[in-house]
Image 1 (cartoon, helix red, strand yellow):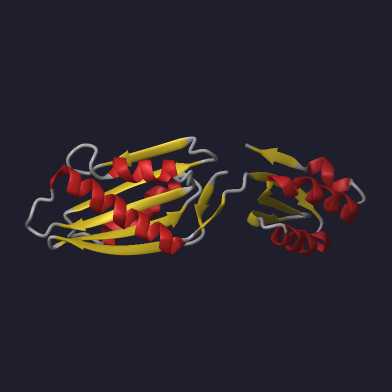
Image 2: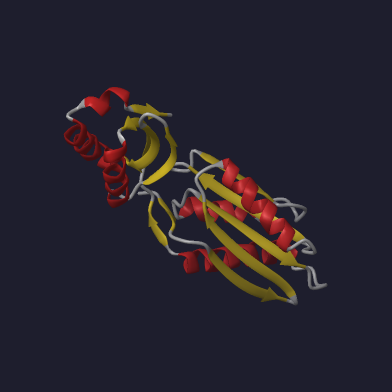
Length: 201
């Protein structure tokens, strides 16, 4: 089973006066990575290094790391290895380092980055990663409120809505809940709204 982090997590570690700050975020896309990184780089503008690794998709279909100026394989690589070994995805781990004046060596760096990443992940907590499906549908105004409640109860969320003669809604729900929600929509609309239902990539 794949996992993701339940929440944002943080951890700190000091090794020979070098300070390491681990930050963990649940993410859904590369866009999330870019916006979080921009914010972290603003907050820690005077850091010596800001390295990161992430995995996205069930079983880490997309993954990436950077050592960001640290010796190759000593920073981002061990963090990605940690994510992979724990089968954690849809997760971004950033480690901010303030250099303390003493070189830690390659082994020391690998250990420090791995430890602070694990500390932050432990503080974030893990939960099973559920495959989601994205749906677009048009419903009448009187059905919209019921649909919102149904999606929320199923562990999904409304992603977008636009109001015209009807309400066009884009929502995502766990894949295993999709058939039940489809049936609910059919019952609420006597099957009419199902004509407009479309699964999105």
